[in-house]
Image 1: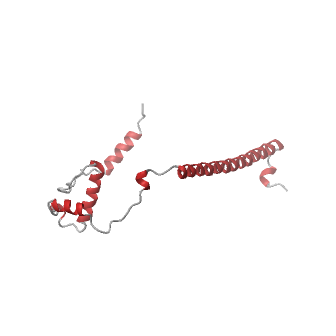
Image 2: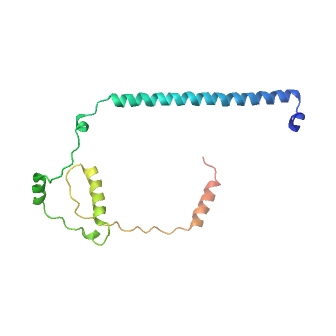
Image 3: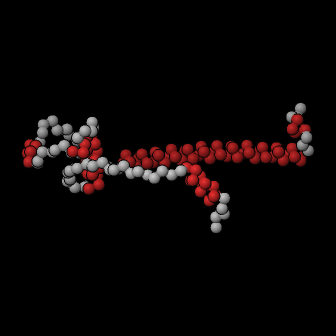
Length: 151
């Protein structure tokens, strides 16, 4: 027994509908095959990359082991003793995490400057007061400009 929707169609329309359904099914199958082949290609590409990385020798600077220093190095301790003492930065005196904040600022400066430096002062930026704008005025402009034709 045919569904009611197919009963109203003529034989040509039924054949055309069957052809469209077969075409959609074929496209779904081809898409599945493509995705499977693409997955195999990505796996092959990843395994090739892993073998290239594994076969590449590490540079000498990376190959050297990192050794933790248990005792302070005398030369570094002597050099640090010659520096003037670090005074707290006045702008951060009442901040609870002032040391962490200065460390983050010093790390950011070190990554940009690339030479010896010292943080001398940290000052907060003044708050900027933006003018208050009526949102209805903005909406009015938007509606006016959206109603015009762009040339």
